[in-house]
Image 1 (cartoon, rainbow, N blue to C red):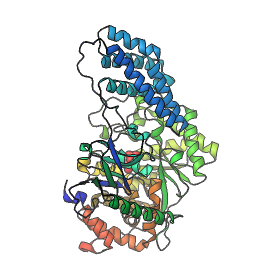
Image 2: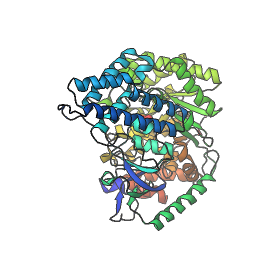
Image 3: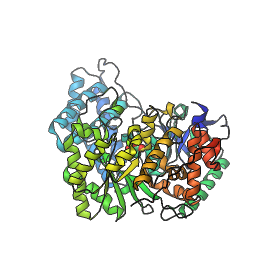
Image 4: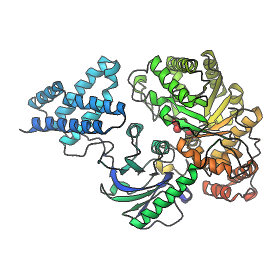
Length: 577
Ligand code: PEP
Ligand code: MG
């Protein structure tokens, strides 16, 4: 990776020999034994079953059932406990046992007999549709676990050693991260991924210190003690207890300082910058934010083989509106495709899914899904008295923005916006903003498409750095459009959570910042330390840098005239919300 990729993310101190270096994506410190996610097992070529294969297949299912029951007993969330108990019951199902035994008798070895019998169950569940079809992911998980046990491997998926631990993985998928418990998982360290990968997003949402692109973490034996610094990106192996103690004290002092910071976002001279939360459900919304700047509704659709019903959608949206209690809620319509496939849409595979039918483009193929979603959002708004803002992901042109706005208004939703995630949209920000009431910049995708760098590709993390001057220029174009038309311009990508970048974004004309609720305090503190004029000078310096490291250093030093830097002239109107 080029020097500039790491110069601001990995601490300046040269890592010691017993220190692994990665990119810190969620600050904070944690120490504990490391355990790695085991991959799903692959079946070896089928041999001939031995005399004990039937017993070992049934014993594997029993072991998995016992494991799931134990996890169900320990689960603190009733819904999670129910799901685990239902999965355990599937493993104990006598019909499944008979099907497995019959296959061993028919000539399949244990692991193959389990996989084959569960494949038949899977097909039957899918054919039945409805609730049963929804359970196929649980059957697949059961199969992977039982096959792994049969093959003498560790169970795949998130480990549960029975005590708090540091989770190591190649990278984590949305499904892996959905049930992570921040009380058990002390820190996340991945070998791959990048600052905008799901690992980073989930870590920030849960407030778990996290390091990505950390080569060597998977070479450590399970149980090795590590100290993880999610700020500097350093992972110390077998650290000294005195060092751990010092880090923990520093962490506690920082937490205490940030806990003092409350209230709305303001620069030192009182310019308001709304500080909002990115949420997937009502549970992510805390009290000390000014509202929701990004409600990722796709979490309701992921892993679903049938469309969530009208009533289910209304309940999910209404829960967030109620939790917001009159504060702003920006609902993003379904953003699926590429890295977020949705089973019920049966999307055919595409050679370049990130450039294909994703985000608003899904409505070209499935207009009924968008129509139903807008109707459910409007119904939830009526039921709760909320006045949600609604925005579409992956909008490229003013025509798309106009058509989306028309549909929203027809559905009775009056405050309409679009995300700016495609360079074309940033370049046409003014035309787009003329069609809608606000824009919100998704810097994760905007980086990906500006630099032609897959956001999941950790090797390209340097290009995906939100301090890249080219990315900031596109943000500036949006800010300029917002100033000209007097309309709000938010940022809801991961860039919004960087306390050092926040004043730069405000100087570029951004009027609200939306991030994981846990990141808000640090951003609030950072903004409170600078005037709007200083923000503009910092923005000018950051734009003038030729690479992210320079931009960051220039901004941090407040060198508004670095390299004869142009100055950001945005009038930065206050956010309308
Ligand atoms: C973004 O692209 O910046 C964004 C906020 O959307 P997502 O990360 O959900 O794609
Ligand atoms: Mg996006």
